[in-house]
Length: 92
Image (cartoon, rainbow, N blue to C red):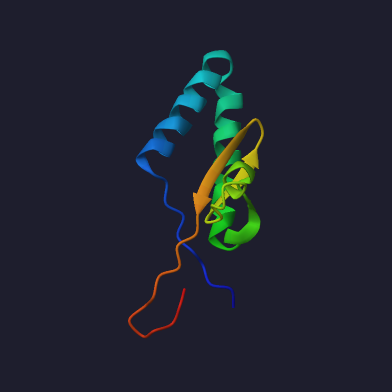
């Protein structure tokens, strides 16, 4: 059974998402709603498949490999995977 990860949005990323959706809604509230659902759906897939995104290329060039990106054109979600040790000693 595949372990589920928790997807947490930072305060900044939540504000950015709201700004994007509000901007789109100025022209089309229905398209804004559909785009919101698409972004949330794709981000929630990271619960089961956190390695789905690629390592951020411009960071990788600098030797920074702990950040990944999920592209939802024309935007991208940049995230990192945290593996936490449980008290029993099992990694999740």
